[in-house]
Length: 505
Ligand code: BLA
Image (tube, rainbow, N blue to C red; front, side):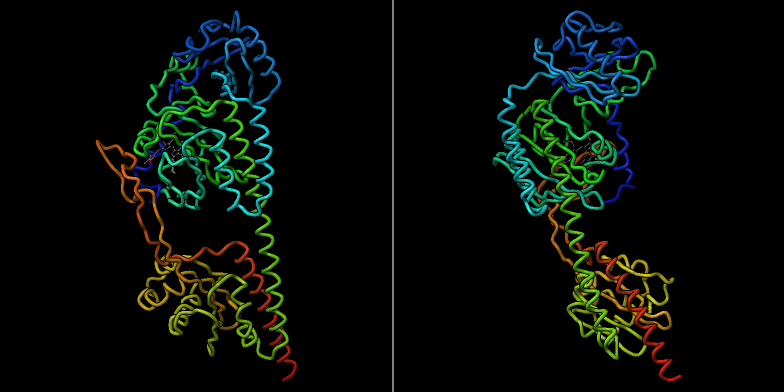
């Protein structure tokens, strides 16, 4: 599934930042100028604030004090402002949108925050004790489910192509399990992902809500649509509401997990019936997602560093074996396990015009020679790698007949290193096909069309897709280890050639 598909482009063009309406679990007004005057309101404002807000006027009466506090906040340069309106039983949050200030109000939740904080304290201790990412995720899903009372809480992780997989789950059985299911990238289109990287939390307490329009819908002074990117009450894309109904969920909340500025995944929560989570508890969920994100970043860096140390130890062992032996190719092939460990491969071959030495699982000799000849004919590069043999064969259709059937199983992944400046010499590592069965939440190649508009899938039953001729991708650390070995080999080969020249000269 790719994003140049016209239907999916239409999805990605839906202007979700400017719906001109809110969800009804709160109300909103927009201030402009100094002293600030109310220029737009949500049509339901009187349900929340019967007194003190009138269009084209400053805040007055019971809200005059809020007006003063907002002016002081604006002068402070802080990004957000939040305050309780105790007598009204509301919480007000303000943020800037261009030169406008948007104020959103919601009812205060009844939760006892002291109890929540003591749970939060033991949760953060638990999170920092978990030794790896995999074990941190169920803890997070469990904590968020307990905290919010959603029927099902998922941790959803994006891959490099923005497809996603449910990697942890905590539920009460009321909704089906989605654990391990994969979902195609189109389910969360590009503009939604971009928005979720800046506004980290969204809630839809009732999928059947009636949108409440802004009054007036465009800005009365500029005629512009109100940019609601950072609003908590923003009305949601109708396509997505339909998707939720198809999933059998009446309420959802999702929290972005941003690792080093990139959307790593979401904590995605659902209930079968309408379900609201107070502003304060939502803030705590955002805090939990950020704590998890920091933990993921730290663990990933530690795992990468440990891997690099291990790989460089392997490199030194290979080098010392090579430099002390009379025949360096023989010596390298003799270090079978180390040679494979260098990049985490299942097989390796050393190819020169005269010889072919191999270790582990490799394709037949004729196929290796064909591949080396093809590599020789390519423009010189310090390394060639692919984790998809099919992609290599698209680049090199002339190889397909010889290689495809034999190579897929043993050599879906190829990493090739030139080992001689003089003649055709290659060190080629191979990885086997990762014939993994991928369970998709709905067929990603199926899309339902009606009257020219694309609809989210009706079916969420697991659908099986076999990923053929794909290997585990080569990591940055492994590519770096291959390069390090490559330049060391070239050095050793040169030195040996010089020694030889001295001896004979
Ligand atoms: C938004 N789609 C979303 C969101 C999620 C998903 C989590 C964020 C809003 C929310 O929290 O509910 C998708 N939810 C999932 C997935 C899982 C889940 C994959 O729980 C898996 C477990 N959606 C489609 C198609 C289109 C589409 C075909 O399937 C386009 C035509 C659109 N999805 C779409 C849009 C939004 C969205 C436009 C943004 C909604 C908004 O924020 O206004």
